[in-house]
Length: 166
Image (cartoon, rainbow, N blue to C red):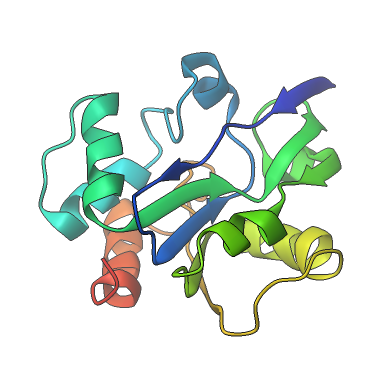
């Protein structure tokens, strides 16, 4: 098992939408940035939603800033061998109670995959005070491990659910 410590969130000035993954992959941890695996479709999907070129980390941060988003993970840390969510052990959630108190305009939380939603329900909703007005949307995971759905179908699903939000 390897101890994994997640990243600080990327937060626009006045975020209205929070997108949550589970925990950065090994490749993301190595590159010290969200969704860094070349086959993870997250940034490709986000680029198509806002029709903005993203070639660098600075471009990705600009996309978050210009769209009123926040990007983070449910877990602050865990033990895990490899990158699979199914390998997560000893999960510790991020402090969403404080985060949402400091970002009161967030009214929607989107989960990048069902595992992020499951971890949030188990380790956040049962242990932290989360505002009642928050709307939750579960989106198909952009991870290459989620091979049961094509990247194009993932993009279409994300576009359908988020086009009015970003």
